[in-house]
Amino acid sequence: MAAKIFLWVGHPNDTSLSHGLADAYQRGAEAAGAEVRRMNLHDMAFDLDLTHGYKQRKDHEPCLIEFLENIKWADTLAWFHPLWWGGMPAKMQGVIDRTFLPGIAFDYHEDDPWWDKLFEGRTADVFVNADTPGFFIKWMYGNPHKNRITKQVLGFTGVKVKTYSHFAQAKTADEKKIGTWLSKAEKIGAEAAKR
Image (cartoon, rainbow, N blue to C red; front, side, top):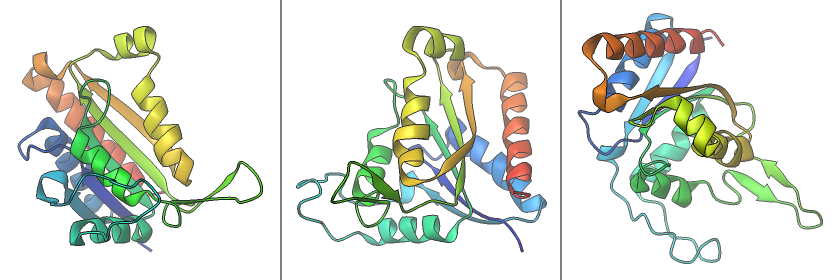
């Protein structure tokens, strides 16, 4: 049975490096026999604001329904996004705020502090491109985004992150360096198809 991969590009610009990395990953995954569904943040139209928190739900727009259907369908999630001000773009965060909700992504227990992870059984590959060098992110800041996305977002809902790739310095990378990054993304895509 073919691996099912949901690829999500969380960059609002459709000509970004994130899209190039996603294209390479998709090539590798499909060449290795995976079935891939893809969504691009720049195509998603929805209200970012979780106005009432968890107390009062807004109906999901069609793109958010599709997003959740793709997560539930997939064996592997592949997320691609830039690192802006230490985190993901606001619109990408808005998708998570609106969809990773109790009863959908997790369920709190009533009698203890624990929760059920409703996306359990899935893996993920996360690709982040940034201008800040990886050693600086790690040693000066303690990898806050990596910890957040792997533990507090995906891990909290039961998704096990298999690879976390940080590509930097994007603003000064030449064609050779970008080619190396694209090759790495394609290789990880091919490996994901065999999970």
